[in-house]
Length: 126
Image 1 (cartoon, rainbow, N blue to C red):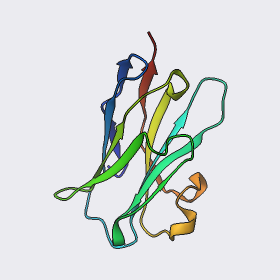
Image 2: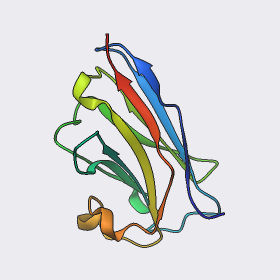
Image 3: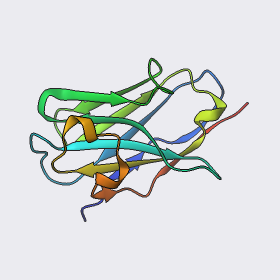
Image 4: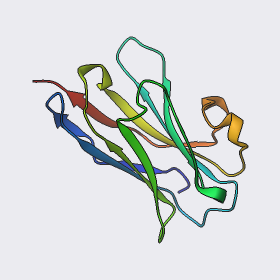
């Protein structure tokens, strides 16, 4: 099994918080990247955030900057996506993807990721 596995989705009220996690098998090399993408009904998939192991580089979509934080678990090949001040427009299926070797400028490009998780539903509603 090489696909990453997401966890932590659910239903939350506007202004609330959720934390998503993604774990992949094996050890991450220096240029290993784990990214988060989301897709709402009737919309195209969009980039959310990504983390590169070497250097601890992070990239965020403008729509989530200042509200979402991606971090790495130091004991596993795992990232957490802390989502604060959630809005109804954040409602989507959130998927984790991994790539073994990626440069910084490419981290938002979905077509460059190799393995994808099944996704976890996040619903923001009152």
